[in-house]
Length: 161
Image 1: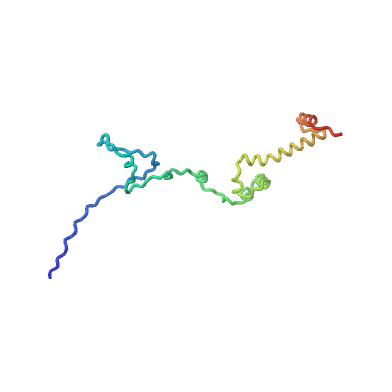
Image 2: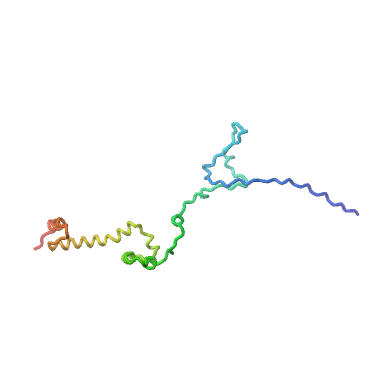
């Protein structure tokens, strides 16, 4: 018995497929380019947008994310739960303001805008000055340059004698 070796299988040709670069534009902005050799080509619009093998379909979020506030400023150097007394230990006026407002951490402080902080800090002072002006006007006194307010207060105030 003689055994013959089977004939070697013919080699398959190697086909190299180039990958298309990823599409960075949203699908609405993709424009099909027709080959120049085919004049007046009538290609179905659905065929142009049909998914092709090996090509990743672009999504609306790919490469179009907005940067968050944290990334605009860079990496934070202060933890969000850091006590304000430690962060502002060299600024006693700021610490007094935070104590007055009842704010204890960076997280609580970041909830306010600069205008809100100014309003919350100055409104008690404005109310106090108003009470001082009224008390002086009731006793026929006034602050420097505030005679007009005292006069108007006497004109409006009912006399109780």
